[in-house]
Amino acid sequence: MSNIPYARDQNVCLCHVCSYVCPDGVQTCPRCESPVHVRKPNSQARTWAFLIAGLIFYIPANVLPVMDTTLLGNRSENTIMSGVIEFAGSGSWDIAILIFIASVVVPCIKFLVLGMLLVTCQRRSQWAKRERARLFRFIELIGYWSMLDVLVVALVAALVQFHELSTIEPRLGILFFGLVVVMTMFAAMSFDPRLIWDAEVENVR
Amino acid sequence: MQPLERHSARIICEHCDSLYEAIPLQAGQSAYCLRCGAVLDRGHRLSIEQLLALTVAAAIMLVLANVFPVISISLQGLTNEVTLWGSVQALAQGRITLIALVVGLAIILAPALQIALLFWVLLHARRGEIAPGFKACMRALEHLRPWSMLEVCLLGILVAIVKLAGMLDVHAGTGLWAMAMLMVLILLIAGKDIRRLWEELGVGHS
Image (cartoon, rainbow over all chains, first blue to last red; front, side, top):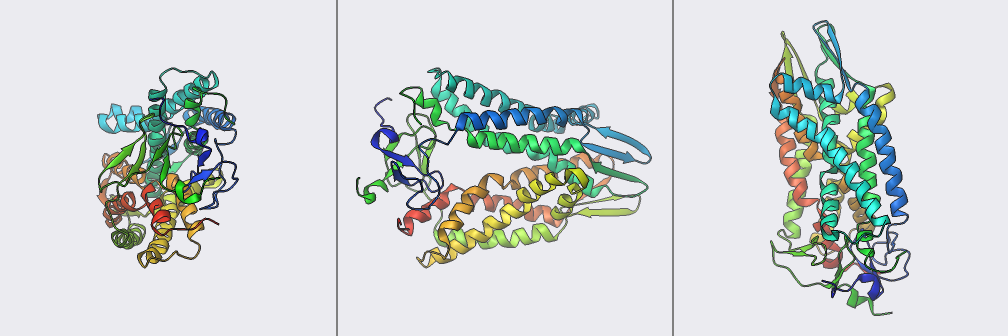
């Protein structure tokens, strides 16, 4: 497989916006006028920053209530996990699993995988490059599905507004949860998967 | 430096920086990177006219999905219904307003802009012309794509329906059907495939 040439050895680089093959050394793409870089600038530092910011926001996102339900006089506050448990308790296993995957499993997988990719790239690891590349594409694909819980809270809170009888209000936890999703999306966008393959050769700036 | 014309016949894998000679693909064919397995290129299934027609259809569905309520509920004779905009407004309360902006972008603004920009560039492309502001429109389309989350919104609506069905009478609104069709149309028109316009219109290098 090592017979396939690398673009930077042929003195060309890719424009991420329009896929144009740019000659080396240009600052902006000759075709679409976007900034062009051989590698995403400060990819590792930026990805770490967004990842750690996401991890920090993940704590209040799970601890603080995401919504406040008043149903016929009974008031209760739900966190993300208590919402999942409530669904499971009432027998809706399918929905409980769906929400659990979207709001717990997906963000945790993103944290673990991006952290693992960053560490292995910093150590210039040769281990399972093809599989790690596939893992990154998987992370990019599933990332935004975590927004599910935010949308469900928005819809439910907009619908259940019966003044005295029952109301549902969004709470601060949902803001932090939304920020976790945005931060992990930024983290995945700022990670440059070509760093995985750069371990094969000398350091590329 | 080599002549620029030679470069357009080459493809670089965006995931591993491998360089390939581009070969024309038939509709439905895909080219994968031998080194990392990522998709390099896909054959186009739809013509420019078809894309434009689907864009117009998506614009109509977008209007319907936003005008009509997506869910309505009733409780002891009282009824309530919610539109997409209503659900964004429900989040715009005090300290959490920031998340309303994110949701508004994800389910209303980004899809609307995508459809408007696609309509503009495709309308001109159909006549073989390069639309005024073509480069800016194409760049905006690239940057909007990750923030357009209609698939997630549709699943969110379905989950909300099931969630509320336990305690109230829930009905799917007209907006939900429009939303479902809009999601399919956006998947067809707003993908990376639109980058073909750069080649097909022969947009020059400055």
